[in-house]
Image 1 (cartoon, chains in turn green, brown, orange, red):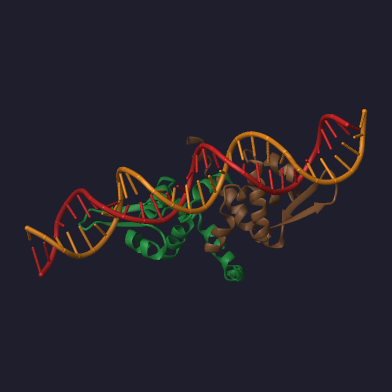
Image 2: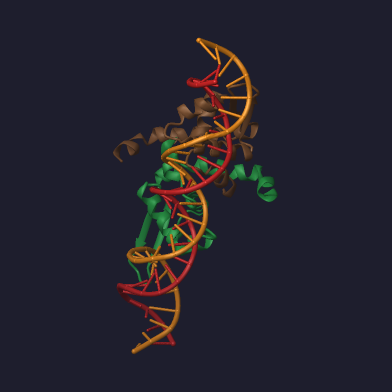
Length: 100
Length: 100
DNA sequence: TCAGGTACTAACAAAAAAGTTAGAAATGCG
DNA sequence: CGCATTTCTAACTTTTTTGTTAGTACCTGA
């Protein structure tokens, strides 16, 4: 359990992984738009950590202006079940989100 | 995903839920021994939040000295899949825990 | 020449989470 | 009486996390 906690904790990581799971490759700017509320600092910070933990791949194209894509790595894809279960957990408990 | 994040974030919650899943009912003191490293404040704090979110039941016996047991609620049991997947995630990546 | 676009970085500030320490309540037992 | 037991509170400090703001690099196209 400790491993999962260490790798997934962080306010935005699960969201980011969720979007990458749903969309495949996403550019930095696309993620910024999708993950509403996140600051640039946090987005990069979380992406760096996810990359360091081997859950995502960072693909940089040597262009100007720069283009960088992120995608789930093979290891990241092993999280698919968890991510799916987690978002369906939300579905089952929509009431809780609204009541509060 | 937001719901799962809001309900599961907290450095100790997944551990606590994991122990309750494995052991059924556990007393406050038993949890304190199992969740190594946790302070009393945090243990109570996390238990209260889990209870508030409806994931665990708190059963207090009117005795002296006091006896309080905690167990997964029905809603908490819907997390079983997730908890199991998360701990098996650790198994698959034991190397990461050791290398670091 | 110079603004425009993209993915960052760095320095600092604020807020949130976690840790520490001391202690309360109530009853049984020697 | 005085002490032990068990669950939990409260006040305070430290640590960690997150937010804010400003700015960089590089080429392109007007």
